[in-house]
Image (tube, rainbow, N blue to C red; front, side):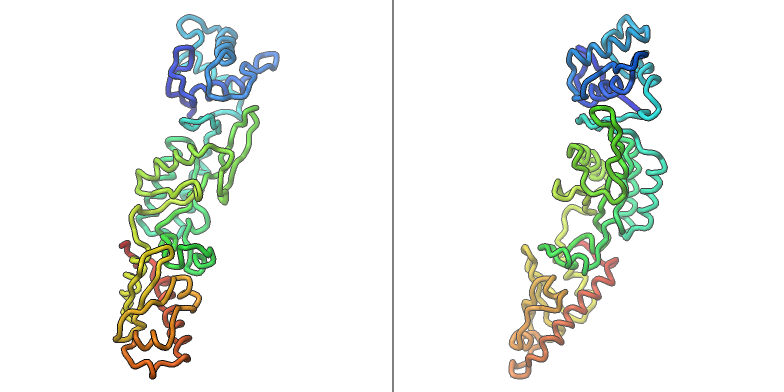
Length: 342
């Protein structure tokens, strides 16, 4: 439902979203001779053109008295504006704090997004929070959200293929605790009144919009315990705010019981393991190195981890233990639902 938050007029609150809404409505509504009441690009600023357009509309519809020059929710002017909007501009909205005009999404798009959540790879608690976010965004702003792919879930291989400092097993995406939440077919009303479909369920970055539009989603997300990481990856929402991915991965690996693990936190993290032996923990390298079976091993470090003399460790052991370390990571990937934040 199209709504205003404050009076628009010479003495009104001068809120950008309300002024933009009235400008866009008066731009969409034409006089009997086909001319627009507001024949300029909407900008959210109340000036002579906006004042004249309001007065002209009121005069044409026989509205005078205390309302003259002003528009607010529930008045005769407001009702006439709603009645006069053309069919393709019904339920016009403006994102708070912006001059971004759009049309409310259909309930079918809302349902489509909710259905995708049920098929996504999320931890159950995060699925509940994502569902609440999608419902609340639609209720507050008439915007349909959706999740991409598996909702943001990544395998360890997919994480490794990104070639970032966040290695396989070190992302919340690997454990169903991060979500990629997109706008789903947001229909923008351009400055000249043209409708522009700005996205679908694979849409990534809505550059045509102010970041404030994403902030509206983020404010609701944070109420449900989901946190954005910034403008560099707008769809991404973390399912928790404070966590050490490296320590959490180590904790999961240690539940298997075949090897003992530890990590030195950094960018990137550096891992240690005893290779299942009775010796001390040795440095085995970054997560990406372990995943590629390229762990940082030598016959000497293998002997140290196993608690044996170096002469009994051979170069042939390198591939065997590198593959054993990789097998630990593969086990962690298969048991992602047992991951616990540390």
